[in-house]
Length: 147
Image (cartoon, rainbow, N blue to C red):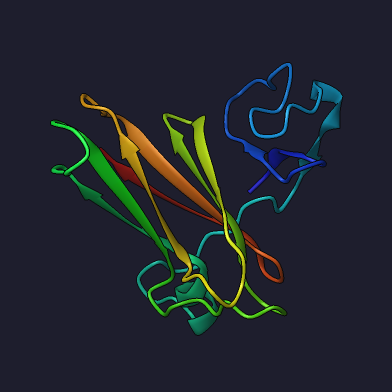
């Protein structure tokens, strides 16, 4: 999937126009370059390979939360088959977007963390939620759901 990627931090721009600066690292617009295979999707979502099952993010939205009334908990787990978190092969970060606008990045380190993350969205969240995970070996994988 062709997209513009920040060459400093790996942020994938999902909007139709480039930002003046990267919303993750602040790098200038000129730091983005077009990448033909920036994001990966399963070839056949109904019949995924083992590799795809380890990389496509699974998104769960919980509409109740102990943090605040009306808060949405958004959980992202990397893979139907849990992705390894070894020094040589792990998920480096997970990015969350709402209606293609960047919301948050979670950095992950190998060995002590599981390949998952959660954000707490304020009440009234609706729209298209996108999660992109970055594997240090197999690239960036995308998944979307409606809120």
